[in-house]
Image 1 (cartoon, helix red, strand yellow):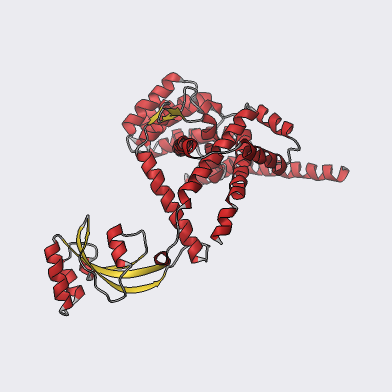
Image 2 (cartoon, one colour):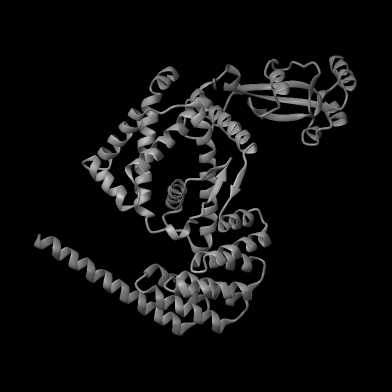
Length: 449
């Protein structure tokens, strides 16, 4: 099974690249108008190499799609921050991949041919035209596809040496007694060999606060869950067998295995060997990536992105300073005002938050969500009149957005604002009537054809 999988890896790698590239093509189409969210001075550097803004955009699109295609104004900073973190990871891996693996021009060409076929584009020229409409050249697109394939090849190379052993397919239950000196550990072994109760001695002497009170019982565990010296000894013991002294960084252990059974795996994969192999490969990749990141030098270049990073580390004052810089550099960007307003609101500076939201409204006044955000602040201040005013503004700009009017209807009902309730019901009825009329026109058009 696994030999067959390895023999087909090149084909699988290309297939995955095709899926990625098609997704990327769709993302380029979908995000062509979002350039104002990118700092043209650069997003970040990883070991001196700039993060590719197109890669960031593609990751951002995928994340938005995972959130159902809709991200609220107050959630956008979180999604942007997540996208940048993933783009940084990709850049880090790509830098490493360029040193260790190769992707041929022929492999890239195969992917492009398959994209043309899969997306029903008809020809390479049509693909190129699609890219041009989004401001991307064929050469740039090829480079992005090649980079994705390089990263995939490196990830595969990291996982290639991972194998499944018989011990990986079982889980054992063990008890231990942890002490601070080898001499004491040997004394305990001597007492156990004379017939004293393991559970009693663990409760009396073990320095492990978790298991000591339970007579040393650690429950069931698998390979990879304990420190290596402990694991190696435990999995060699038979059920009921007692270990010699086992030194680890925690102290000196005396181990007794009390049970052994076939490993249980979660998820849809029923083949234990395949499930364990996938898990071990994933763990190997995570360890490698963790080491790579710990040694990397990452510089976030754009102030709004630095603001996001500080914000989600809980450093709100630092985030505010960075968002102020972003606003100063680009005062016409409504999102920067929203990010700053959200941060002010979080630390209780509501007057400053309201001021920044109002600035955003001047530029993005057709977005009903902004008025709802303002209304919620006024509601918390028990300012019913101003809250209703903002909700009314949201209703006015919502136009034919039925979901927004339904949301506002619920809010007005909760506030017992019955005049507003009547207006929202009328708006919803108008939209429903319009939708039915438009649907009937479509039906007539189909009959004529």
